[in-house]
Image (cartoon, rainbow over all chains, first blue to last red; front, side, top):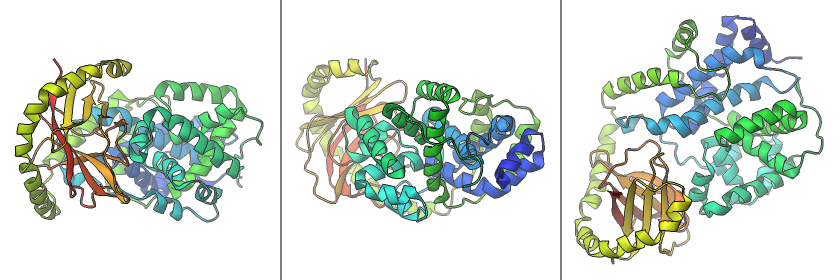
Amino acid sequence: MASDLEQSLALCAAGDKSALNAIYAKEGARMLGVALRILKRRSLAEDAVQDAFVLVWRNADKFDPAKGSGTTWLYTVLRNRALTILRTESRAEPTDMPIGEEIADERENPEETIARLSDAEALKHCLEKLEPKRRMAIALTYVHGLSHGELAGKLGIPLGTIKSWLRRSLLTLRECLQ
Amino acid sequence: MTTGSPPSAMPVPQHLQALAAEFALGLLSTTEADQATELAARDVHFAAEVERWRRHFSGFDRTTPMATLPPDLWSRIEARLADGQVVGDQLADDAPSLETSRSRELRDAGRLPISSGEAAADSRRRLAGWIWNNLGFWRIGGLVATAAAIIITMGLGSQLQQARSAPVLVAILQTPDNQTAAVINAFADGRTELVPLTTFTVPAGKVLEVWTLWDRQVGPRSVGLLQAMASSRLKLDNLPLGANQLFEITLEPAGGSPIGRPTGPILAIGRTAQRI
């Protein structure tokens, strides 16, 4: 049985614009929240959401419910777009933005984010079994879009070892998630 | 579980398990991500591994607070659909055509009146301004130490080569007693790194915070937090960077300064200079 979202995606693929609007009405506010956590600036986050919907509209026919859920597909489109903006476009931007526009959640605590995960999620229970630094790294990377280099800086881990350190963390996490 | 459950787990080699996780987290470079996309198209087990990771991580998306949608966002999306502006066929595509809308919005943002929160920010700024303005006396010490610093910079030659390109801007940070504490290198591609040359004792519950100041009207901005002095990349992505720009490292409470401006003692300070 396809979810509402998956049905909407099928309708989008068939050219029904009201189905795209239905996705926007249901997921838009959450999507903007996700983009804001990565990009921090409202104008950039709105751009990411806008781009994501254009991409969803144009690529809805490529969504295959046999390969994954509509939710992961939708949020992958959004996160890819937000991360691309974060890593490439925002760097080249003019810098006369008023500071007040920036979102003050820079220091949102990753432990709190993990605590907010639903108890029903294996992810929560398995992250809690990891060393605090390791689970923090995973949350920061997914939620705020930190790169290896930024993680190294934030956690005080040498740049040369961060990659293998994070891989070990992920493989430990995977064992628990199984 | 609803539909779309990926095929059940088949042994995926460990390095591909890790690659799938990095892919789902968004850690791969463009080239690596393209390769992973290709691999997922060929190998259903790898694709299922990626989907499993994405499904687990999507729990984080559900912890996100809802943001207020601007009333005109949907009409902006509709306009984009109508004018046939192409973003690209691939999901992870770069979209140079988006530049136009983005720069237009930035210009619009620049014309907005100053927000009411500015008043509170102003008093914090004045406090911060006092700290920054009273750093003048260090500059004298800085000049004395310049010769030593140049020699140290040259000694870093091999490290700089490892970075494949030479920095366009270099700042040498010095302690109040004129020890060279760190070098900051800024590269043409926007990467900015801190290379430590000394260690600081960081008491429990404290961190080192790196700041930059390019405009006293704007005030200093945090560009990185360190548990200890270590080679690290600074987060200057959105900030301007030019010659004669101040950088400093202060000691702050864990998690960084609570007010977004330096509050603790300054451990090292210096200004950028253009590489000749």
